[in-house]
Length: 127
Image (cartoon, rainbow, N blue to C red; front, side, top):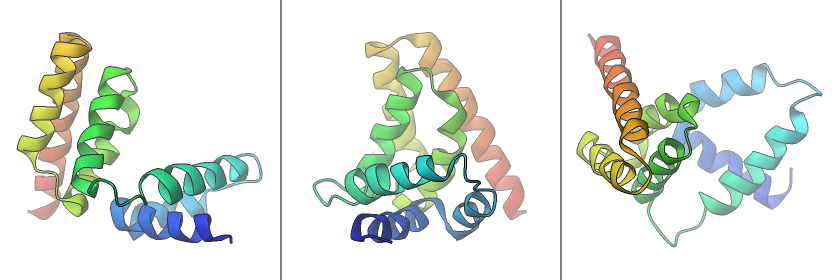
């Protein structure tokens, strides 16, 4: 593993948690291995590993961008990651307020729906 990949895997585990990463690694195949390497080095080893802004701020940006571009499938994963990055439910709600104004109310509304569902699931898991 090169330095970017090593650093990326560390950040990925910090943000998403060992359980999530272990599950993803366990189902990796030769078909998606190059893609997994790309995101581990590029997304996690470069962007998320930068200390220019905090992990909390990156969570807020990521959630806003996912919602604004209509990439809703990863929103629950990143909501769960907020417990490790320090982004609060209020932070998430603020990010989605920006989405409503700059990218559209329907996208922000759907993202909030997903966030509410995910937070409810997380709370149920702790009961």
